[in-house]
Image (cartoon, rainbow, N blue to C red; front, side, top):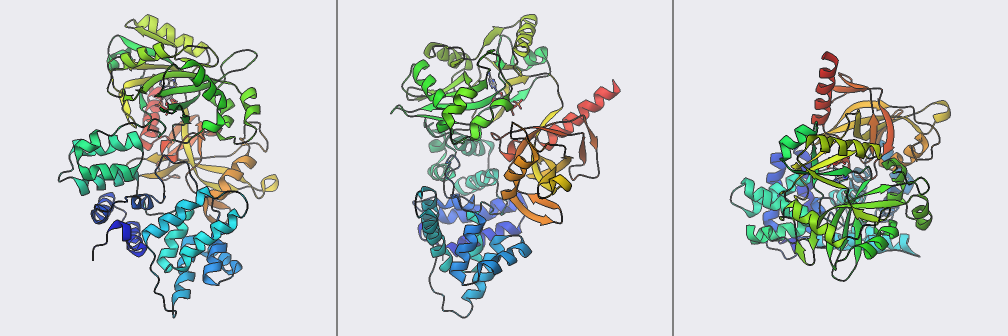
Length: 576
Ligand code: ATP
């Protein structure tokens, strides 16, 4: 019998999870998923799609369950009658608390009359309540919401409840697969236009449940997806230019040159009600961390509602010199004593685009018009908030001088933008280019770590670095880095990094721990060689971790293709 999404039994969804986990081909996954989406196409509430993503909220939401493995063990013990000690032992053996849950709940259910049926709706409701629990008695309340689900769960249901809670669903469904299955479910043909419409709608509102609902109503509805100031949208990214001439060739003349500020991206939203929200490139809401920026926006931007794209850059209060990104990265994460940090690490916001203004999206307006509007509504105030430093020119010499000035001013280089171009959320586009000095630098993800000896016992001393292979959608190893010190002001000591990595351990074999790919670091290296040691086929020589990138997702790491390109470039340098 086909079940409508609202009343779907959770076990039906778990069967889909099992199917997805078993099939590694992306095409097959999309097929399984679209069969499933067909079933929920007519239900009112499409939140079930979040469960497919291993979540219970849209991607833009910063709500977290705040559930540790220890709390899951307690809940499991409470629901199964098995002791926490025994559960922990099984966990050590199996390395996956989900599998442990499956084992203990299956055993418990054998022989008992098990009739209570768990619905997806109930799972969503209980899990959606978790992040809002605060204050006294929180742990007990969380425990009871989870135990209530586990008590009614079969073995396989328990497995996926635990995995969802721990953010480790392991069914290998990337957002591209969800997009493709929405296309398959809602349209007769998988044309480029249909795929683009779904992707574009997602990039604007970052909520697959809403996108699916729109897609069910047709392409027009998708195309009319409106930006909502306050809900983050995906940032547009740039491609590389090799030189000023190359940039002119690619974006045409005249072009708009801007400083490429060495800071972090900030999407600043203000809605009709005057509420201001700030998001990072990863769509994390960091408004609370930046009361200074909220103040600057109120003082210097003359408009009722808008979405601004900008780069926040640190400077030294005394010398007024700009500082590199790593010096101010602490400001993104810090949750306490914020005022103190605002004073210690001041930032300047450089606004370079506007995507929404007074109730209207500007994505399809030419960049020249958007940048002019910025200059009309922003009252520049150096060291607070201002429009990005800019030069509009067709002249190679003038552009090169501007590039040099940017570097002398401690910035990374320049951005070169086509005057007519639109803003494409979530895309890496050829009409916005970055030009910076060639350097051997990559952003990589830590996927494994090795415990040290001597002074480093109990802490990780060596870190395995991986890039992202877009073809297989997996992370591929390309090097190991050790040599971090025990203490450092910037949170870059091996002890600090160990603290960040320990909660992400997936499995341990002897001294090696496999790590969930979450932590992104910038690496300096000497060159790249072919290497049979690593599964990417390439190895970095002398990689050195120079900074953490808390503003990056694992998927934002360098791609295998970029590594291969860098390898080829180095090869060229050696030969010529
Ligand atoms: P990189 O590692 O070179 O900084 P990236 O991966 O951060 O690149 P790209 O889109 O490739 O991101 O490069 C553009 C980035 O530069 C933007 O994401 C933004 O954070 C930053 N930036 C600084 N100044 C500007 C500017 N004037 N216009 C656009 N982006 C800018």
